[in-house]
Amino acid sequence: VQLVESGGGLVQTGASLKLTCTASDFDLEDGAIGWFRQAPGKEREVVACMSGADTRIFMQLIEDSVKGRFSVSADFAKNTAFLHLKNLRSEDSGVYYCAVEDRRIGNCDLRRSSYDIWGQGTQVTVSP
Image 1: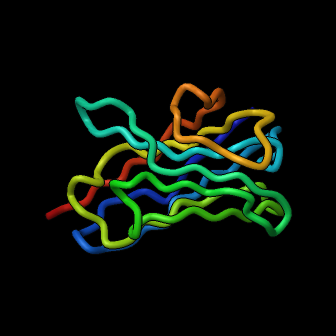
Image 2: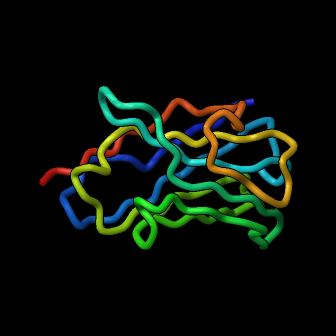
C-alpha cells in the first residue's frame, strides 16, 4: 500500500494550491482519508478528513483553524484525494501528509492516531 502526495511548492501569501494524494494497492473508498501538516519544530496536526465513494462524499471535517480556506475532495475513479488550499498564510507552511484509516467507511475523524497508512508528504512554503 502506498500513498503519494504531490502539488506542494513555494507560493506567496494569499495564493492557492491543490495537493494531491494518490493511492496504490488500496481503494480509497475502503477507508477514511485524513490530511495533516507539520511545521518545523512542531507536532503533526490534523487539517481535514473525508470519507466517500463513487461520486459521493459521505462526510468531511475541516479543522477550525483552516475552515473557510481549506477544503477536500476526491476522484474515487482515479483513487485520488485532494486538499484545496486557498488564501495561504505563512503559518500554513509545512509538510503536508495524507493518511488513510483502513476499513472506516462512511465517516472520518480528526484524530491522528486513527490513521494507519501514511504518505511521505509534500512541502508547502508560503512566503510573506
